[in-house]
Length: 141
Image (tube, rainbow, N blue to C red):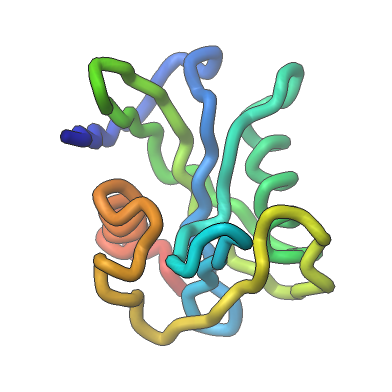
């Protein structure tokens, strides 16, 4: 079972992941990984020596090709699975310019007026909950 908890703040040193609820021209931006045929928010691991914001900027570019964008911190979150807890930072991302998708793990991005059904998500128990938080706060433009 997976348990997701949202916080207003957490210790920066504990944040290992970043997730962006991303929009481009009024549509949701979701990624399709090369190994799966499901959707996910742009995001990933924080690398050694990176600030949380640097990780968010890098991951958004790597996974969407975003070249110009604004990031708004939303909240930190934790995911508890199989007795292990990891922490992450959720951002709302407003992309204003997309470039080519870097040749990495993401096969393509897709734009949505409405989010896909939960069963079409890679991380169905986590990411739709995080995107819902962004919508509740009115941060989805």
